[in-house]
Image (cartoon, rainbow, N blue to C red):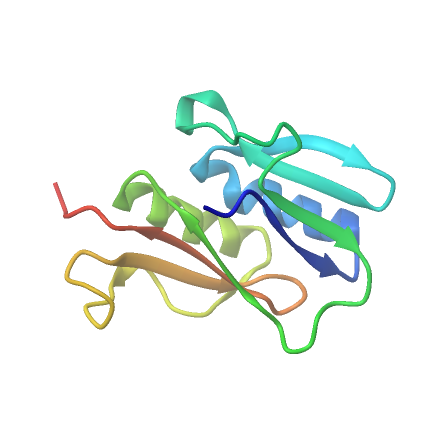
Length: 130
């Protein structure tokens, strides 16, 4: 199991504002700040980030080339939809609207956006429609 991961961003405050809005439907909030970096993690009602600093970090530095892909787990399909809407409202660019991706498996429901630095960010639910 992966404990935490992170990406390098050109503008820490711009990216933090984006991620706070985009990941709010998935239960993320700031868990820790250190100079030049912020850790985000899930709050109790959505699950538990075992690392008290959070499981997703953004750090002020030259963004990685090529840009990486990060997928966040969503509790249900409505959370995927809410992530996509929130990410677009926060300035993200659509990279694949909410829907089933049968290529992966019959219940793979996901949405994709590009963050301010061009990273491909996904929210995914593996549960069948209710």
